[in-house]
Length: 269
Image (cartoon, rainbow, N blue to C red):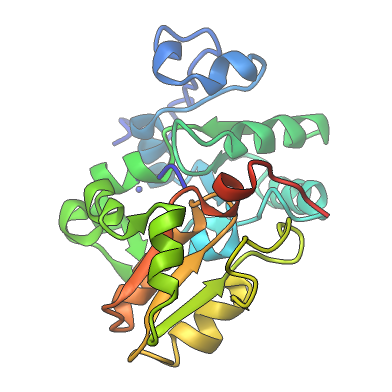
């Protein structure tokens, strides 16, 4: 889902990246799993970006990138089949710059994976910005785009964990709510993620998230209904909520843990 965000004394100062054996490793559990990946801190990245010596690359899904990203950050999803060739092309066009890949912070390992794969593909200038979007947004809200607009205060602009939790319910409560006359159950998993219908919710409307946002949410469809929405593991709906709020939806609920919490496994086709 879990979650930050753009001064250098002299433009010629060399970019300093954190050692994989950093004393802060305890705060970044992914570093132990990816010991060969070089990392960069938020302050280091901010200085490098200001000096024009670093390129920020968002490796999350298109939906996550569209919701929030640092100003001027590029997007190359690590899930894209052409990730290696795209990151190599970018590095070739920015030969003198550091390529900093990032995702959703310390609990997200996509940045490490992206850095590891890029390095294996021959990109020596890549580093993982593992504090990610949450830290960047907290420190530099004015250099962060939220739904295409610069933020002023991150705490006011971003949905807190507590606020999101109020919109989440257990499967039993979810099924009970689905029985109401005005309820509409929507499965936003894509065709790759789908691992079976949920018991009792076999008639859920299937609309993959990348279609649901432009074709349903942005058209403000069915705002008279209570929307009961579930994804695969309960993380994508965190980003979806920004679009629901932006487009005036009031009555919506998410399934805790997504389909995986009910089916007890996550299979991919």
